[in-house]
Length: 510
Image 1: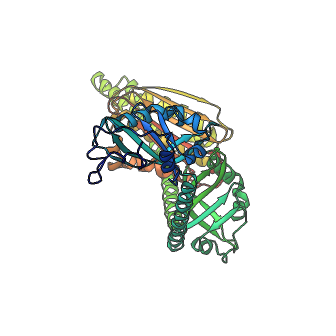
Image 2: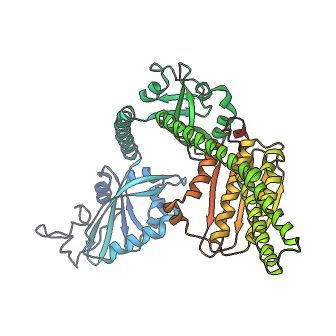
């Protein structure tokens, strides 16, 4: 056979074998010494594969790369050098390459190869077409890509590190220039980073806060509450809360904290990142407004008490005297019968006015609330209100602590009055449910009807005086008001107050 390189021995020098193959040419004898010399001269692993995918020639570099002797490579289907899970895809690529005569060269691709010991490694492979006579071969040139991939990964890691450092610098610039405090805690709730704004808020010098437990910045009386908050954060709850911190000089600092827990890949709690805003001025203003509201409500309750006593002790008594005198005249036989009938009607009207006056007096100033407590006062009011408005009120109570502070009792009593008046006026039904109960740390009151309901969004915009009054009263005892209502599906008004609020809230006794 010709001693010229494979694929060129029978092709005229003026023509390329890839573009104009000689149909009369015969394929080279790949085992011939000259062909083998050409293959061995290649610096990379080289395989010659026929259309059936069989290896017909392989150089020493291919033997070293794949871990097979030349005898074990020759005749082997080239896909056997690929991991089993990838062979179908590789076979499809090979068949497409042979089926498309226009494809003379396939760009270098990185694929996963498999050695004789079944170990897998990346290789860079290029394919070129060689057509001699009626036969076509694919010449595969492969190079171990392990080192190249390692270098690429190192370059990517270096680039990522540079970007990370740039990001860290940008982040630090943002953190140090923001108006908010940034507070980072580790899994032990010790401070591992704060920005300068956070240090200035609490009156510390740079670096003084580092390593300190978060509890070092709270007042001792707040520890139990703070432990509950931090426990919720460890459970993964993102919270935005308002609380007070203790400055280095011992003064009080009110802040709004938006806290985000941090977790390891294993799901284990790894710390928390908090954004902290100073709201002390706002809190002072709110406290001043609350003081005004407290004084207004106290004045209102005092005036209600005075009017209630006046109605009961003066107006009510005078109406009773008029009713007695009319009764006496009605029983006098000297008075004409027609006049007596008229007096009877007047007596009935005055008795009704007296009863309404007494009921109004009880609303303004409940003696039962003052002497018998919230449960008896609510039960009595529900009975009187139902009789007066001709409605049915189902009242139940359970688990109330004893005693309930006067502040909380009065607050619930006023909320009940407002809620029942609103329900009777707007619900369109004659049956209501009132529930009063206690838990380990709260007291609850609900007023429920199954009537017309209302649009909560519209109610928020209108904010009638009744709703505002209930909310303001509850704020003074650190309580909350929630309303669940939908058109034609009824309304439930729910008031709740923490038991701890009774000792330091306003004293609005009636």
